[in-house]
Image 1 (cartoon, rainbow, N blue to C red):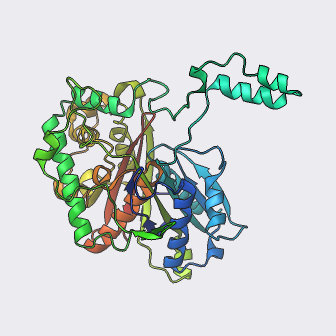
Image 2 (image 1 turned 90 degrees about the vertical axis):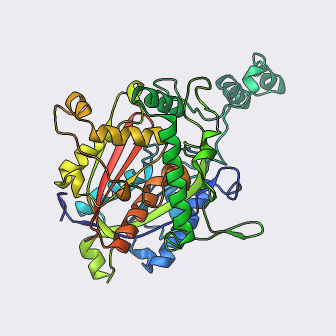
Image 3 (image 1 turned 120 degrees about the vertical axis):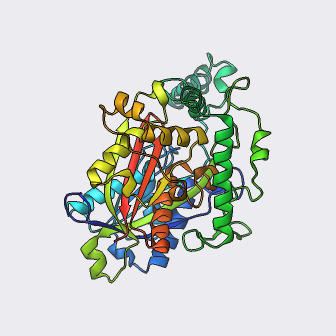
Length: 430
């Protein structure tokens, strides 16, 4: 049993769409479409009656103003009872872990018995906004009583004002993009280009093998994409012919002269969705369901974004292990989000560093090193893709199914997120 207070939370089912590069197979599907598709399929596969779902918690990172509460719209579009309540969450790359832990707290305290949670993202369908002067002029024009009034509203608009405004890619607090921050971490932590490329090759090689041997067959659905309804059945983000030499040929993206972050050792912009069904342990028993596993503990942490933006897992993982009453050496399987190879290697280095523990963790002993054979055994976000809001749910399903295949007991998940945030979770099979 875990150390959480209240009812034990069981994860009974999980599923995701294929993860595909933005602008490819899902380019005509919205985040709402993808969320609906995976939710409807998960319910059908699980055999759980829709009426059993008390709550839907879903998230997205790139929000459309046309959908104020995407969780509710997904629930309605997927055919869930209109009496099922729903709300939307967002915690950058850890969004679907937030969806899971929010529902888990409601289940633990007895307010909810069964919840459907997940995340969905379409980087092919990002909202393009208007400049503030143009938006203000349009509002003013709408209030004009005459044609002249409406025309006057645009009298101060310049050519620059009519340019479309894409979503920001830089951190609001620092003005740096995530890639620039990863470049900073690579330099400060001494993460070499060669180490990054080797890790990227590792991820792609393992993902290709997992797809080839059928590992993902039960956790990734087929999506029939209109108008021709051709099936998309596999991620198109991983390289089947990955070699270290191939990565070495790529040029740095964020610091073209001295940098080491390339398109090859970074996760791609991705479309996709993932969902989980979670419930109280006693509810699962009452319904005759065998859970994939259970939530033992979770933790979030925040750091100064201007320091090392993606290093927060070095703080959330010690917390989650303490709450679970475990040591790093007790963990059988690790799923670490791969935003950038430099970020993963920085996180692993911090967990094993005595100097880091002394300086940042109050003099505690370092957590220790993660054995290669336990880490991201079927690849990670570098190769499988990273639809921001869906990655956490993908990792939960992937980890629990791997525990089931191997008969092992515990898995630790960690995710770095924009804003200097880190998420961590311990799952157990029995």
